[in-house]
Length: 462
Image (cartoon, rainbow, N blue to C red):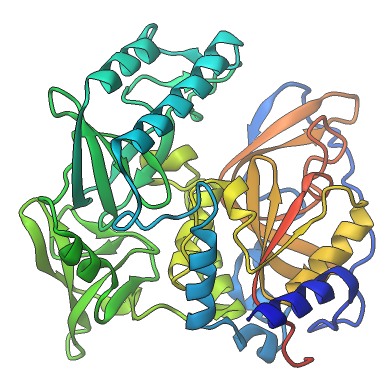
């Protein structure tokens, strides 16, 4: 794989490969004109992102944008993905094997010390404020009093992963309560965690979830599993991989989320259902899924068509910073999409940006050079477009322009008379790379700093 990856990286940097529907990369994008009707400083709700045709939210638009070979070529096979996961585990803050990871008390204390120091600096500098005065200090006291344990458990019901043990929120000014910086993630049913600390009253547990660490409050988890039982649950036998969202089960309060994979016990093709091994408060138990159409036996092949199908199926799903309220933010969307292929990613966008089989830094390039680099990267595999604070999935090119999909909260629009207006989307949407042009945030294409490519080469020419 090393020689293949090096050759592909050289191609990414130097060669313009032929594309599915045109011979040349796109030219400079047309600039977004200021909105004459907008009110400077105002916030409005948007149904679609500016310049996005509704048809571009559907899979068939992107199936027409690529050749059949480009759509269905396997970009990374199972062995490639295993090597990629292994390589990424060597990088800080990427996905870690919670069964095998070194979780001694010294490492846990170092993690906690770093997180509290970072937050303390933000509070002292005025970058963060508490909505409940004293909650940050109280969380430090609680963490110091927590008792060390070492237990492998599985999440039964969705639960918030708090950065520190407090239900109080931490916010930047001006305060927007949709963005609680103490909300690190939401854990989905079926996720394996390693519990390292428990508060004196038993309400809070400090856990490593593979992709992130944090605190759970009053979480419903399985009883402890042995390492062998945990590994068998996570890795062994046939797998039922969830390829839809909110998949109903026979348990009235248990729904399966995109990207989850569970042991597959059997299917009943006559009725269209399946049995899986799922977590409960009593342990791991057989669970009936009445409609198995949202399950795939084994991980999906990593093809462009499958990636496009998964992300376009999520169009309009709600945005949720840190997964609050069951929504997804930009990095959780991509984490869950890639999990269906067996690719294990860290929780944060900056970490995901360095997790591809190939990575290219484009921060210093002109807009036109970035467009060419994105076009070239698209020939090699599925591409993440990373800008500080946001990450997107590259969809391809239509009308001579590149497009991306992401879970996005907002963007800025310049007003004709000066100033700018905030447009809140708060959902998964398709956008151009020109959003924000003419505002203090600048255009997406100007801010894109890294391309992460999940693929090892261009394959045959279309």
